[in-house]
Image 1: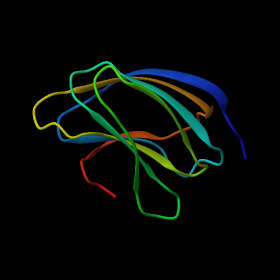
Image 2 (image 1 turned 180 degrees about the vertical axis):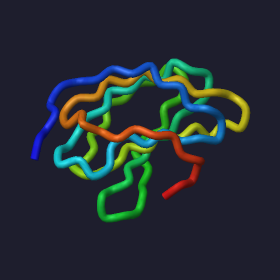
Image 3 (image 1 turned 30 degrees about the horizontal axis):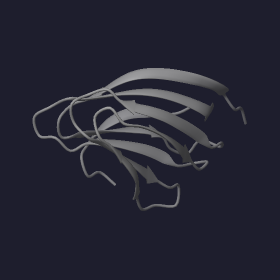
Length: 108
């Protein structure tokens, strides 16, 4: 089993009606420092390894937050806008050997 304990930085764009999934199944926990630099709100959720999904925070434009995710969990960043692309700057630390992919909004 290998762990990747470093950090990654991302200037993430999420298209209207999409969500971005970060992580899922990794052995370690991770932390996300996020700043919404876009023009629409971005909702942060957690999808635990065992199933389900729950809200963590909603960042309005200009807001920032630090969120911690459990080992095996997926961070789900949702753009609820139907017309405007979301833009979030992320710094991720902890277990950074994470899957990353876009999904349609509402995917569990």
